[in-house]
Amino acid sequence: MYTEKVEKALRAASTLHRDQVRKGPGNPPYVTHLFAAALIVSQYTSDEDVVVSTILHDTIEDTDYTLEELEEDFGSRIREIVQAVTEPKEIKDWSKRKDRYLKSLKSGPNEALLVAAADKIHNMLSIVRDFTGHEDKFVREFGGSLDERLGQYQNFGNLINSRVKNAIVHEFNTVFMKYKQFLVELETLQKK
Image (tube, rainbow, N blue to C red; front, side):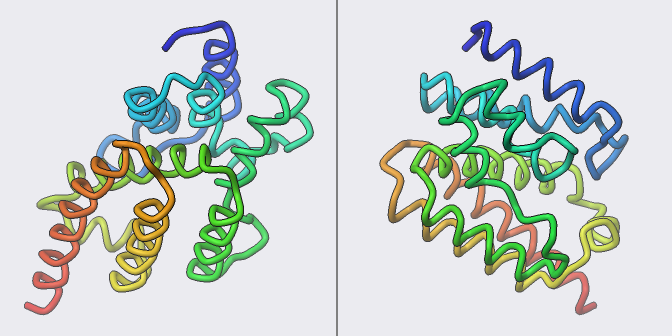
């Protein structure tokens, strides 16, 4: 999907995230994640605001951009969607931050679940692709307990499977199985 609003979001995300990189081989520019997630979600909806929200889903969490600026630039519906998928910066504990994120998604609009699903699909695909064979690097870069990671993704999976009536759920479930297998293999390697 290409529209003027999508172009505006692409430009905003490119500017706001310009100095950020992703974890993994080569540290690709952060915007590659945002654009990939937007391409994923656009396979499952033609709702322009959902695609734009996907492009902008990390702006509040990872930049100095504010919800007020987001609303002024893109409207109240996009603000509502992005706000629902934004992890609270002020909570430093990983598990507590993820719990609050899930609570926000539960009370947020269904469109936010589409954005979150596309985000998670791309994150899991990137991890499996980039860290298979480099599991030690995954542990160093991401930290945290494998059980906690698996539990949070499972909680998210339970939420979208119960609330979302869209084929993106099937893609999430398929990719989640690959991600779980990656974590099982990683745990086996750690025990050796």
